[in-house]
Image 1 (spheres, rainbow over the protein chains, first blue to last red):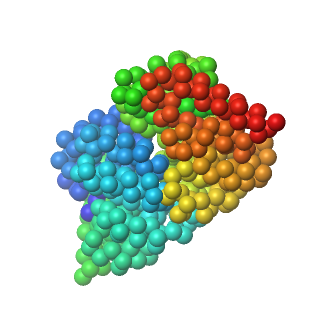
Image 2: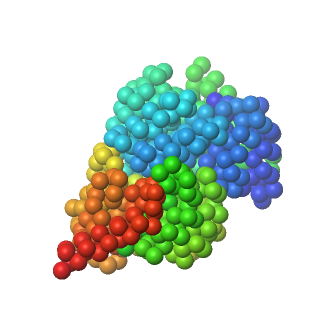
Image 3: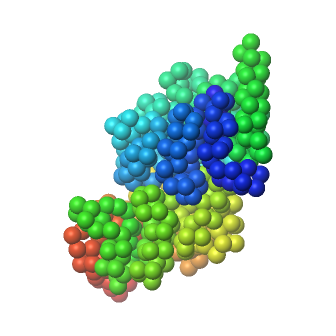
Length: 224
Length: 224
């Protein structure tokens, strides 16, 4: 239920690398999320390195937001590098957009996780206005999952109600961005994504254990 | 007035590389656009290689669409690699989003080009509904430019009217995606972005010359 977002730098002063963080935390993580900043520094090889060091699935979170052909091309490269799933923006829409990368990903055996809301304040301006429509796109395209921020638990509840068990719900925004561990799980998310609270810690393993313990306690309290 | 989008593969069967295409076409190009697919294959060094081979500015078109902190981190890496400008999605909104990467880019001396409409059909579903608002964001944030597709000339006309000379307008969608060279320039764009028609050609230099000539003829006809 914990996904760790591996955005550099690692450690309070950048003294660690991604493999160190993964080895310290893999007992508490259900998977890892690798984004553009890490790949720009360590190359696409980082995906395999994280998989190998953790034995856990890796989400390639490039937040793809391009025309269908370009996203399909990137999906092929990410699949070849070992990514288990990729993150795509729902706001790109269906029509030589999201639909094209979803069908390519299906051929590649890679899951698509659609962003339908984000954790920053600006998300309210445009993205959140189309949350219901993008959720419907996710359901009709039968994607693997969606991203809904932990900072908006009412949106998670709404998504879970509409999706039943047909979509995995991934919730970023825990820790430095403001939401407490367990908030999103209690609202109906499958996974909480935590980054800086763990990756910038002087002891990533300790911090991951702390988050994981808080998640367990919250879930025990809210689910009874 | 011609920007060439360097998305691999190059040549009809992938027989060229980006530096070959750049050397063949630099007489006709005002600049080049480098995206995620090229960087995943050739590394961030591709930006400097393109600049060196062409002597022209390079746009790093990652279509950034993340929270402000992550986009700012990517902007720093792209600036360090020699990018003259970066492409960011207006859809992310202001509020720890677009505003954050714009202020970081200003410090770095890098231009921000905001996507306010796209060339694929799906753009009509969500993005185009907020075109006017995102155009206002671009104007109030005083960014370097905006992306508006050549396939929607009426949106280019509207943008030019609202922006006057305060924004550069970049228009993709020429060639394989359907719009004729010059369409966007005549509607008010500063640059037309052409990819596959040139990069997949057996003679990229010939094809670039052809596009450039068509642009000149169109502009002569429409501007008198």
